[in-house]
Length: 132
Image 1 (spheres, one colour):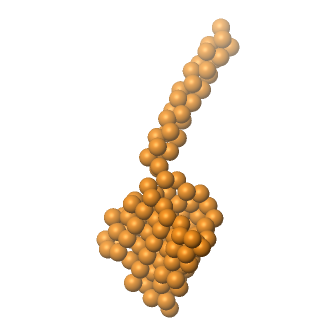
Image 2 (image 1 turned 135 degrees about the horizontal axis):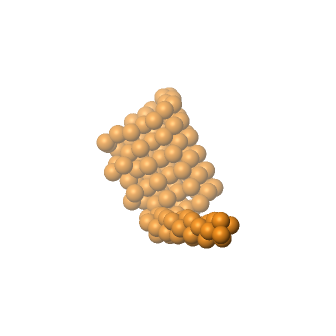
Image 3 (image 1 turned 30 degrees about the horizontal axis):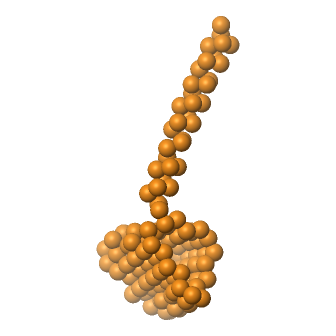
């Protein structure tokens, strides 16, 4: 637990659950574990965890492997990526929510190589015509 009078700047990673009641700036990476931001917690960081519960304030992108819950007292400014997202009545949220990250990444990855191949093919014939 990071207590209410503790301030941390930097990267946090670990192999156990974490509760934050103080101030944290940087990045938080707890893949496979849970993160809880308490009512007095102020986090300015990108977060990656299995389950993220926010009762305090978070500014940054949140990636939840299982779910993200923003309670009625929670305040979030940033994007949320998780298969399940709960915004309780009264929660404050500004950003975007992606509840199907696997589909988005495959769709985004699909057109890019095709576009590069098309551009490469269109350049080749023009170069051949200019030379001929």
